[in-house]
Length: 394
Ligand code: FEO
Image (cartoon, rainbow, N blue to C red; front, side):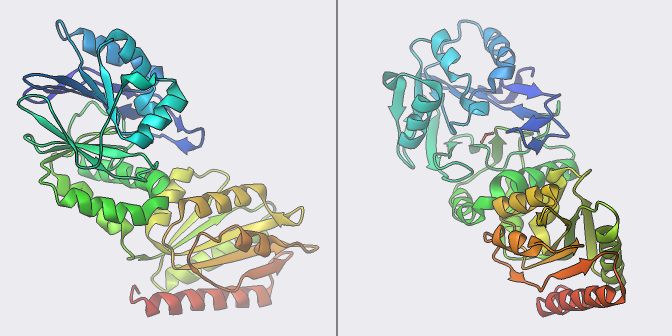
């Protein structure tokens, strides 16, 4: 990533990972990502906010070399995950007088994960400030976005919030600031759904903290920078609210067609009633799309054949994934097909205890769907409609 100037004495110096396609060995990155690091020159001290994933460390080093006689006094670590902290050890070697400024929990993690020596740290507390001379950094603890140690750094005089993962988006782009709002909204929602949604309740408190600050610019550590902070704060407030939409998400897998016939029938019934339906073929779908659609869907129905007495393994994976990301969906149901028995619906129910949804009676289909099965699916559709009406979303 080329060096980009944000404001006088404030630069973006991190890396763009254009062709990365997977994060944490599970999260698809259709648009790549960036690891944003920021260099700030105060009249007395120079600070680097976060670093980059070691796979892209050369981009950071090349950028830093372009500043003549650069001396870094402080490296702020907002988050210990290695895509932001992994290059700190090499930065500390390049700048032997630099100190890592962070909170006690992040320090503990950095010592564990990266073997950084204890004496290289300066501990700071919540709302504590650090003077750079003519500029002041204020540290705002924002735990669980998405690790327990996560914090944001606020540059007081310039009203810039460096929020690390919080408000970020996995989006590789040459644009420093948000330009294509629709594209960034989608990427930020995907990021929220995959990374932040399990911590929805913590985000409420952290967003309130941020709103107490006067923030002109939000500079996250992934994706473009927000010049209009309300754009992303308002989006987060909507996603974390209890509001759901008149949508039914149906992740499904079908081996010989029985489950697919049932899903297609349900989809048509719901469409006829004016409900937005999102059938998601688990075998070909991108689980990021699944996660995005789970953010607002009032109802989720998992549909799967029975395999070796339980759900198809891909449906089991999606069940565990949905349970982990904890969408606010209000109603949850299951369609299974089978020929000689099994405990598929029980297994799915037992593995979705994180969903605080009302459970709708499952539909079980023996063999190819028959008239009584279509009647059960009709009843399921009617139940969904009744529930959505009760929420006044239909
Ligand atoms: Fe972008 Fe939690 O690391």
